[in-house]
Image (tube, rainbow, N blue to C red; front, side, top):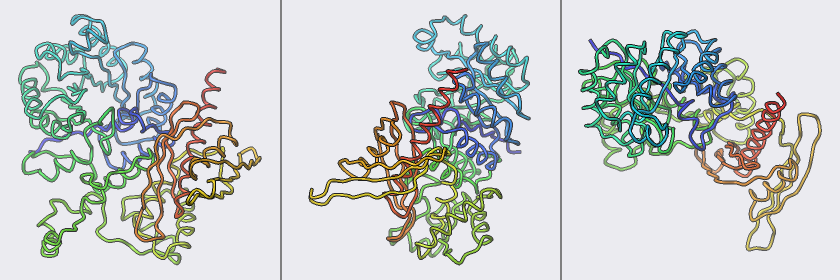
Length: 514
């Protein structure tokens, strides 16, 4: 009988805390819904003690999301654990995930503790968590660089203290597959009581081995994989959820394990996260990239025509990619669009459909054909940004050819209080000019850090997607824009950044007042 591998998703915790991937509360809820639809076993919603925003997000997800276990991360510090207990209170199925570093370099340089002190902190933290929650996970941070016998001692102690899951993370992405297999096999055979709890692996991708190391840990006895959509996370990222799940499924003959993830929703979840965070999925990304099932070489195309199995080890529809490119248009009705969205893995809520149809009709009026990718961009872009207070009423941009005309941008912004403001900015190019105009309207100091643009579908009338990173008064934000006019898409991305900055400043004022 095949054993089950539990999928612990940390997109909203380890993934979200990495540079360039921060999300608003509304965005986190939308990603959490997609993870629930994927049927992951655990959603690590955040680190409640890290900030009021993290606490609010964990509590909101715990209150709304049904099905998966909702986990909150905390150090083995009483205040952290108590804050996590409070954040998880609404959850039907909750897990407290507590951790402390165990490696010599972390004990010496970060914690300033000896072995005995770390061990006691681990035991005390687990006992405090167990008193409030029956599902407690303990992580030995930087376990891979921890002395083997000491790691086994810590694992035995926390299991005796009541931990139901023990995690052996490769925090710095240092290990290799053979080392992972050997360590997990040794721990499985050595630590008393470890057979009665779940053994977890959490691998980082610093050497590009996170997926391979996670699979090796499974072969060595791990029954839980901690991973993230699109492999996002600290530094080079975490083990990629879509890659490790499809490896286990595609090579079931080798691993002989079961995973409950609904793989047909992988592409939809991946692309939603990309739109929310403003980070494109690379074309050559395994499983969910645009080229994952594309074939250009003649010999490959010949083989595919004879039989897809000649060059494809998975079916596109198994990961939520449709083999066809649709043709919807301005005469397509509500039911056709909703049905196509469902085929693509998106179950639209009633309150979303009207707004999505409005954008679809507007796009169909200016395009001859609306492709799957166009529709997906509309759906994933819907409410991925923040709401107000600013909206763009009018924009006019003048670019420069041969230095004869100074680039400028004139725009009118409307505020939710009913006022409007019009300003013109100059710059080295249209985006620079828009930045100056927005600074004049809002009073913010804006510095663009990066701008990436791409075509969503085919043809000269294709939608353009702009993803931008910028600092507003020194604080970094992401923005996402979508339009058949690429300059307008950049303006949308800038406006989202402005709105996020405005809301963030308002939250800070409310916190200070409290």
